[in-house]
Length: 164
Image (cartoon, rainbow, N blue to C red; front, side, top):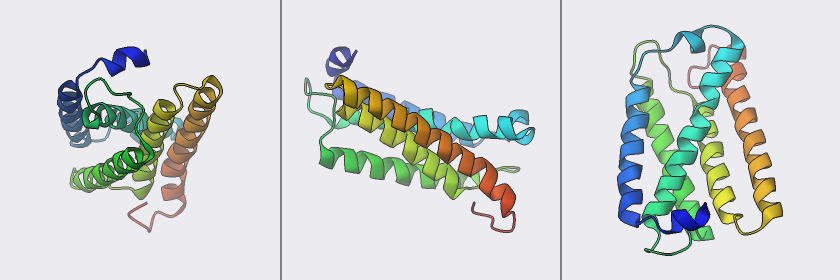
């Protein structure tokens, strides 16, 4: 799979990145779903959806910023900037989402975005070592689940703090 990603031209990665950013922006402009307004489980699933959204964003960005034919795994420096971009994009998107009637901005959603992006970057960086690869996947899943849990339950415990 990673060999096929290596064949993807950075220009295609950039186009995928732009399209993905538009998709995220469009989804954030939607009114809240019945799933997120219903049970705790539905709200948690909705919050957990941030993780694969931002894992995709990190993957497309990693494909876009590398040299043609280069390894998909970002260097430590590139990984830092990929994660910084994803956090900044997540924060701006949350501010945008906060302007949609019935929706709000949440710092914990940005944390879930970061966990998704960091998971993707970690998996890419560990792709050549089976043990590290499996560990990156397990830690990434656990971090995303925990962040979505925080995004779901902490705001309900402190409703007076609007940015949670």
